Length: 116
Image (cartoon, rainbow, N blue to C red):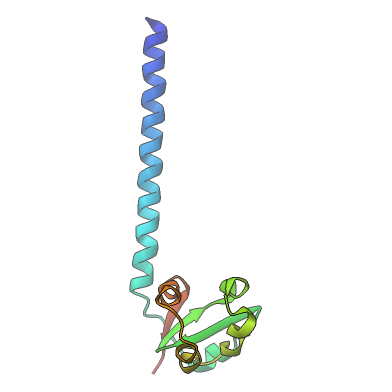
């Protein structure tokens, strides 16, 4: 009888911990999505220009500012992305015919909007 009760208590604890972890992961993912939807930090082109190489690469695409430093090693076009570091790279990005998949990656890297 004691073993049965102990077993039930252990199962209840495991289920409880699983539910807590699941809720925490869901909250973390939704807060990441929300943070990318409402980025309004104003960043000047002069500030973007200070981040102009592979070790620190910010660029502007269609009025939004992105820190793509961490993406550089994974860029399918290799180091061609570095050509856009520190400037408005909208024409460069659009001229290369980036896919919808590539555009879908952008929100992860957005850090602000270009100040007018």
